[in-house]
Amino acid sequence: MSGAVLTVTDLRVVYRDGSVAVDGVSLSVDAGTVCLILGANGAGKTSLLRGIGGFWQSEHGRVQAGSVVVDGKDVTGRSPRALAKAGVVLVPEDNKVFKTLTVDENLRAVPMTGSAASRRALRDEVMALFPFLGERSRLPAGQLSGGERQMLGIARALLLRPRLMLIDEASLGLSPIAVETVFSRLKLIIDEWHTTMVIVEQNIRAALGIAQTAHVMEGGRIALSGTAAQIVNDERVRRAYLGLEG
Image 1: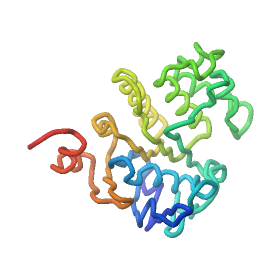
Image 2 (image 1 turned 135 degrees about the vertical axis):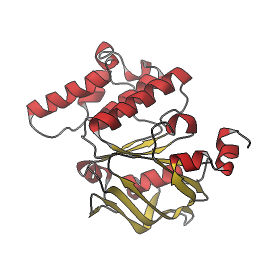
Image 3 (image 1 turned 45 degrees about the vertical axis):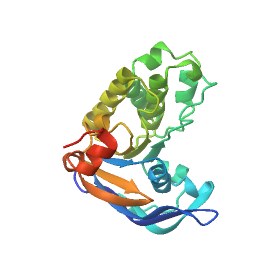
């Protein structure tokens, strides 16, 4: 399936004190592709994801202007619950799982839709993608490794049948082996589930392996855009994010 799943136009997100977190960002993400958002801390990456995902409306800021369109429908300012029903799911940087609940309880806490048979089939698909979930079903999520908690958070998101996944810092705090495992699962989701993704990521090397397009944010704005290959070969990006010269 082709065409844009997500179209963001002149999105402006402000804090309650009036300071600007996202300043006129526009981007488009085609079906089944991965869009990578890069930038230094404080550049507005997470604010952009939360603005798209509807979380700012109920927190300490708001979408002041612009629009978010998913599959041709304007979803600007809708609540996270309403956006989840529209197929947009955010996997946040922190608090992606309930640490005091078991792995099984975390999965059962997801408000799945559809018939009992379809819910069971979807759960089986997710369990096949993340086999460790069954092996650790009775273990409190807080006792999982960082990589396992990340994958549990992604599994929870998949149970909502997302059309668009917003993933904030999938590799944060993970070992190189865990990063490789997480990104291999993301690639499977893209290839087999045809899920569209917007990923905020500091580990540019890992993310560029699955991304088609990329945007670099500075000061709440997009400073540089292009294909993943164009971005990785840009001298500014190579110096700032890859530590490479020439």
